Every structure is written in structure tokens, then in C-alpha cells.
Amino acid sequence: MNTNITDKILNNKGKIFENEYFSNLDEFIVSQNSIKQLNKIKELNILNPKDLVLLHNPRRMINVNYPIKLDNGEIKLISGFRIQYNDALGPTKGGIRFHNTINIEEVGELAFLMTLKTSLVGIPYGGAKGGIKIDPKKLSDTELERISRGYVKELFKFIGVNQDIPAPDVNTNPKIMAWMIDEYEKILGTKSPGVFTGKPVIIGGSLGRDKSTAKGAFYILEEKYKNEKKENLNVVIQGFGNAGSHIAKMLSDIGFKIIAVSDSQVGIIDKNGLNIDEIIKFKETKQSFTNYDKAKKISNEDLLELECDLLIPAALGGVINQNNAKNIKSRVILELANAPISSEADLILNENKIQIIPDILANSGGVIVSYFEWVQNLQNYYWEINEVNTKLKNLILKAYLNVLEVSHKYNINLRNACYILAISRIIEAEKARGNI
Image (tube, rainbow, N blue to C red):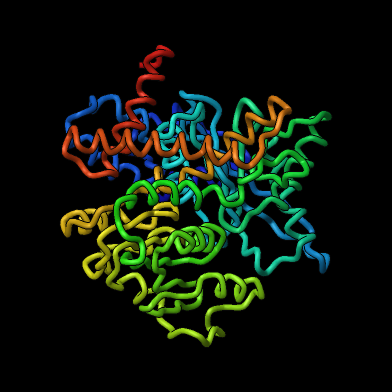
């Protein structure tokens, strides 16, 4: 990224930058990884290369810096971002993450992926992403609440039920969404539950939202392996947070053998299969796997390189990269995390005939049920859990089968098939609007 342009953005606090602000695309690219993926699609000669320029940069970028008071009385300046990438198919949608290394390029790439994800699964949204540069582990609940409410005050004019709909992401949760929706409604002066999703059920959240990311991935794997003996399939899961623990439980319950899992500190391994119910109970005590004494320890790095049938990266992005891609031995990788495989690693894995079920399909269960929550909020009519799960299964399997069809039709891998489907729908919407 051009440092001068980045500084120009970060020094214009609280302002919006439209695409027109950057007249020369060579001057500023918000996400180099996104451009690399678009260039791969361009090389396939399936879509018009001129149309792909539409997705080179976000439609809108917002950077805010605002003060909050810490519990000790000190004032801390908080930096945050919101990127609304494309809204051709509907209001933008995407999570807000709290992380001390967040930057505008990371948020841009995630907003790009969300744009493709909503298009791919056929829900009427564009894509967005937000982030606040903090380490939530070093802050109290009262400090996190002030930061959350402050973020909403800064972004109030740029989000809304038909404009941009945030949700939880890394290090955010229903409690934080509750603070945010409460602040938004106080400023608005009326109730508007649909402007944030991933809320507690008591104030308009959807049943099933907490397990939806894992549930969507589970339905795909259930379909993929429907004719195979599950007990013969070895699974490795890197990351044991909300999505990782839920997918481990779901797969274990239908017979898959989970041989290794990890948290942010260390992994544990048992080639005869781990007792997932016992491990979940252990993690409920808030302990790290460093204290788990019923299985051998393994580093997160070594865990990724284990020989297995299915590898599920379920933590942060970039864990499989050009440094370790050649050592990956799994037959299949399901990307439950966002962008866990770098573009360079993607090439290596494809050369080694490792099938990848890409993030914009594999983890789309979260945004699908967020969409269901939004619909329920607008109707003020709420569904039972069986209805939520049935609708989720129907929608994600339809997307999965469409991806398989495109993959077979053009003899391309699943990631390229996902991109072709998603981008073609966005282009069609832009053409219908008269923008191209």
C-alpha cells in the first residue's frame, strides 16, 4: 500500500472517502490480496476484465478517532474503521472486530470478502467490515462499553437498517452488539433493532445465531461426506473459539474422528480421537490447553501440518502461507476463519491437489442467519430454531451445489467458482442500475 495515501486517509479523521477521491487506481489499492484474487479471475477469461475494476476498491471508507475515559481516569484515543465495499445488491453487511493489530488494509480485505459472500449465497446485501484497534483483554467491561458506544456515535450517520448493518466478529459478541444497538436507538430516538445483528435473543436476536457459522459449514461437510464412513475421517481443527468448538462438537456427534484441536496458546492431539465433550467442558473453565493433561501437546504450527483428511482453520487469517503451505498434508481444507490461506499459499495448495472449501462459502452461515435476524426484526415476527436451521441448510446447500456446478462446468477450483458466481451477480446488479 502507498504509505503517503494511507497517511492521507488516517490523518483525515472522521471523513468519508468515495471511490471518486482516488482517480488513479495505481495510486491506491486498499487490499493487495483482493487484487491478487481478482487478477486470478481475470486470467480465467470467463468474466469481462473491464467489469472487474468495479471491485478494485471500496465504495466508501470511514476512519474515526475518538476519546474515551479509562477506569483510572486517563483519556485514551480510540481508532476505528468502517469500510462499505459495494452495495449494488443491497445495504452493506459485515462484522466489527476488536483487535490490537487491525488496520485499514485488513478491514478492506474482509469487506471485500463479505461483499462476495453475501452475493454468493444469494442474500440481498452488499459487503462491509469494521474494526477498532484495541486489545479487549486489557480493558474492563465498562471501558469496552464506552468504546462500543463511542464507535456508534461516530458512525451513526453512516449505518442504518437499509444502509449498513454491523454484526459481531473477532472479540465482539452479543453483549457488545446490545450496547451498540442501545446507543444507536438512543441517538435515533426510536427502536430500530434491525440495524445490528448478532444481538441477544431477548432484544431481537435470532435463535441459532450463536452456532450459525459452524452450522453452515457442518451442512456442507455433511453433504460432501454423505457417502463415506465418518469414523474413518481424521479431522484437525485449528482454533477452538465459538466456531471451532461448535464445528468440533457437530462433527464428533455424527462420527468424525477429531484428532487435534488448538487454542491461541497450544494444540492437543490424540490420533485415536479426542473426547470433544470433555474438552468443551474443560474450556468452559476458561483454561488454556496448556493445562489440559489428557492428551499430548502440539504447537499450532505443527498442528496445521498434520496428516489428516480434513483440516479446518477456525482462528485468524493468514495462518497458512508461503512458508508452510508446502508442508500441509490434509486432503481437504475448509476455511472456517476469514482468509486463513494467503494468496501465495493458495497456489501451492492447488498445485498439490488439496481441495479448498473457501471462506466465502464455508463460513457464510453466520451472515445467512444474520440476514434471517434482520428479516425477523423488520417483520417483528420471530422463528423457532428448527425453522432457522432448515432455512440455513436450504440456502447454504443451494450455494454449495451451485459452486460445484460452476467448478465442473469450467474445470476450475472451488474458490474460483465461488468468485465467478459472486462477482457475476454483483456485475449484473451494477448493470441493472445503469452503473456500467
